[in-house]
Each structure stands twice: as C-alpha cells, then as structure tokens.
Length: 520
Image (cartoon, rainbow, N blue to C red):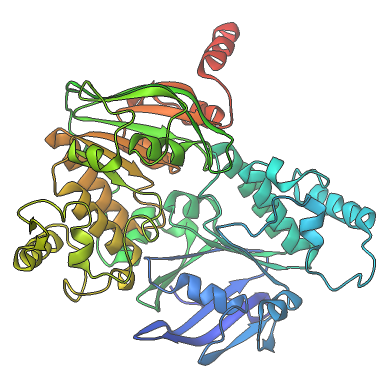
C-alpha cells in the first residue's frame, strides 16, 4: 500500500505533501499522490475526503498552501487552468462546459490563442477527425452540441482536452450520466488512451467500475491518503472499508412484501419543459403501497418534469393524476403535501434546503403552519427544537447541533436531513429523485436502507435515478424513460441490464421482444 515500487522514470504526476485549507477545514492534509504514464489511476474517498480539491489543485483551479507538483519530473507552479493545460493536464468535469448552440469544432477551438486573427475550421476539423480516429471517439465535427447525446458530449470534452495536448486526463464521475453501453464505449476509449501513454485519473463512487477499469487506486479519508493499492489485488468491499473506515453492506436486505392497494395512478401525462418543448409525451403508470417503482433513464429525458408534475410544481398539458383514488391533477403543492406526498428533490442544495437557515428551520419547512409546530401565526420553538433533536438523532445527521447552518453539512448529511423532514410525516407516496447522487458509499448505504424501511412500512415509492445499479437493486418494477416516453416496464427480478440500456437509448421494449422472437 505504498508507492515504493514505482520507478521514478515511470512517473507522470507527482504531488508531494499537498496542503489545501478552507475556512474551518483542511481539505488536503499533506497528501502525496503519484500516477504513472500509461495507467488508469482511480481516486476514491467519501464526500469531503478531499478528492476534488486535490484534482482542482492539479488542474490549476486552486493553489496549495504547501507542497510541490511535478509533471514528468519537472517542478510546476500553476497559477491558472491555462498553466496546467500548457503542462499537459486536462480535466473533464462531471457537468460539461460546452456551448449548446455552437458546433463540436467551434467548442473545441473556443478559447484558444491560435490562430489569433482568422479561424481555420477546416484544419481544426481535420485534426479533430484524426484524434477521433486515433482514440475510437465517434463524433461529428459539424454537429451542434444540443443535437448530441450525453455520451457524445462527453467525447467532445475529451477531444477538447486532447486537442490542447493533454497527456494527463482527469475525469470526474465520468459515468454518472451514461447508459451502460456508453460506459462500455468510454472504458474502451480510456484503455486505448492509456495504451498510447496517456495517464488517466478517474474519480468515481462506483466501485465495480473502479475495480474493472483501474490499474491502481488511491484512497483518501478526511483529507489524508489511507491506501494506495493495485486494483487487481483488492475487492470493492475492501475499498469501501478503506473509504469509510468500517465494513459496508452492498447487498441490502429487501424483504419480500406483497404490494398493497394502488396509491398513485398517472394517466397519459403530457407536459412542457422550461423551454416550452414537449418533455412528457403520454406517460402512464401506477405505484402501489409496499412497492418501489424505479424510473431508469439518462439525464434530461423528462424525469425532472415528471417529478414536478406529480408534486404540483409543473402544469400538465394533458392527463390525470390520482392519489388514493382522488384526482389531484390540478391540486396545488400545499394540498398535495397535505394528502401525504413527500418529495426528495433533484438538487438538495437549491430545491431541497435553504442553506442559510439552520437545521431546525429546514426540518419544519413543509409543516410550519400546522399544529403542534404552530398555533395560529405563532411557532412553538420549544417543540421545534425538541422535534429537530429527535429527527437528527433518529436519522443520524452528523452536525454540531440543531442551529448549524444547512450549507455547512456534507452532501450525505444534507440528504439525510432532507429525508428526515420528508419521511417524518409517514407519507403515503414518496417521490425520490436521485436520492444518492454524488454521495459516498457509506451515505448511499444509509439512504437506501431508509427507503427500504419506508417500503416495509407501507409507503409507495417512485424512485427516479440515473444509477442503474440502484434502480435494479431497490425496485420491484422498473420503467425506462426516453425523450418523455416510457419505453418499457420490467419486473426488477427479471431485469436484463443490456435490455434496459437499449431502452434508455430509445429502443422500445416490444421491438426488443420482437427481435428476440425472430432470433429464436
């Protein structure tokens, strides 16, 4: 678990004793990180362990207070990302930085100093096509970004880095928004790049992928390196234990529970997105008590609009919604909440909490008008504080106290705070949007256990997630959504990962079944 077996001549990146502080926290505490030429090196750690901070230092976004950076044996001082790029370091962020209204080639050359006075897009196109051919990156240089799938946009980001001469490529959660088939293609590209001498630094929470794609793994905990291991010599269970500091259960116990009566019925839902374009196109399904129905799909295919429509936040153009047999199609959100609907929103920071309010205030956001929290216009703060202490203890929210500002919590603890608020009212229906997105393995385990507990208690749960493993593990039935339409529905115990991946990319279930019948 040391770097002693790494030859100096093989090293592409060496970060020695890096220290980076933020107010009240040491994000990187004398971290030494070494990556070799031609290897895929995974960087693991819980939320707040210091992974992103360390890579932002390497990419020139942050300047360390202490420590040194060497690229191919040369000591470097980066004052900006441009310095890092000139040294051969490129970073592909989880949220792509592309201009949708420009073409692929225009995005690739955007911001370059050369040529200074006249763009030669034809020459740039030829260079992009050569890079695409060399690394197996299928791309159309004259296509507009808005016309591309998420996987294709990711290829553009990789080509941007290669075009600028990157020999060291940092990928932050690169598979978070990809279909299984796109993930396979990405991994093929990364292996090709490594074989040609590139160094790939791979940040991910998906331990199966880490063990499948990586050569070596560095694990951070609380800002310090706790292990450097050969991927072939370690299991995902051991990696999780190194990250969290305790054994982690991967196969959650999902008790056999017979579905109860119908709680939610959606009939022929049609809705527009924020641009006024169709986002939902005839979506119909049901969710019963004691049942988790998962919605699988690549980001941006109508999931957010579906969640908002069910919660009264987005008007329907057409269709009906029934809750326990009662029509709530045009009911305001306050009434939907009163009827027993809870929502875990997509963005825990912008939609799920108010960062400058304390934990107690966040925990009563939904029911501060109701007794016993309030009597008329007056809030009973003694009750609120006791209520908050009970929930924080019950849901194991790690915080100094109930008066801590919500924005100071880690991602996992903020998500547990939101779940504490949403689940404390024993809801009949829970709409959970990406409940574990961006959470480390320990926090993910806690959140999934909470959802299974609610299922056992009798809640109907609509689980909307881009994590296909999560959908397959937690759900009783799986719906696949693509461009606002349901492509198919499968029982989770008979779900085929490849079939779901094809439906996520736009293939209808009946078409796949027809092909199987013909082949047979």
